[in-house]
Length: 449
Image (cartoon, rainbow, N blue to C red):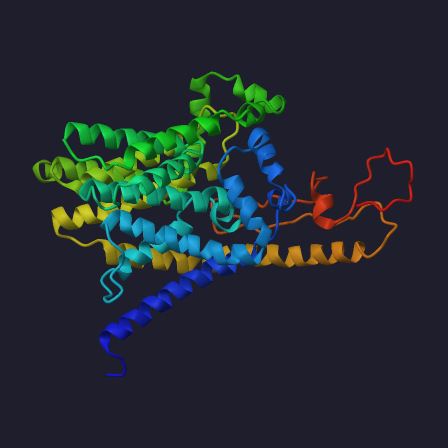
């Protein structure tokens, strides 16, 4: 044999991981700088507190502030690793272990998770490849899924993480960060902590010593995030938002049905299909199902996914990317469903779903990639125009073409790019090292952008 089997398996796993990292790197590299990246000057922490009070109170803003200092090389390293960490965290959540790299049995399950966490989540362009989107969705999603993984592992192994003064202090601060995760994810983290505590008391399970500080930290972070005036300001920032904000809840819920359909359509309606199928399976084999742990986590994942997508319906404006965390739990529900069917019905769906997903990705990958390539070429042309104009001293403005992004293979996989130069931006003068004309300058010959 040319290779010993364990070595061959390691090489195959390395190849798959390398291809996956390269895929994320490729699309991250193509995605150009956008409005949110130049919102704050580099090394300006004061701007984070300004955004906390006026725009967004999530911890993702601080993460973005740190990453932007190494834009774009640092982001090109962090983003693929974050996506890989998400895939591994989802695998661990399902199987309570890492993939066995000595064997190939875990490859189909890992491939399903890896591909679905890119192509079956809500708006991957805004939640994965966009700098500000990754900081506020992908990276925070890794934290959310890792939290759920630790929670599930601790349920079976209470001493999985030792309880001492160091872990208690760390748990509090980690909890505070989790409490500032996202407007829908953070309250769900709090609810899951409450559910864990309630079930542990009822079933007389041991609660680790570090868990109460974590719970307190989550509550503190949640209170801090929602104490920000940013949400009130954004909900009343204009005539349209004020009007939408004053609609009755019943009408807002009806309007939100389109967003719910968009969210479910983005994952090819996996959530309603497996929810209905799991219900029918439970009726078919009730005695086995009621004792099956995978079915419990399947039902919990479906419930969490639905609530995360639905809970923001009272807001006047709800971008689709807000359902990203709900997409992750749809993937978790799918994997728990596969485990449940394999355990109860002795039928392995994994190779069939993996094959179907590979065919789907192969069919859409070219039309998916073309808009990113087009966007990258347009950004190069725009940068060349700006660079040339900045060499002059008498210009009063710079004219650049607006981005025209081709449509992707579906609405969900179409890029929704935030154009930074379609209007004057607060900190564009800092980014380009030029000054804007305000109309109040006494010297009309001063350099302007």
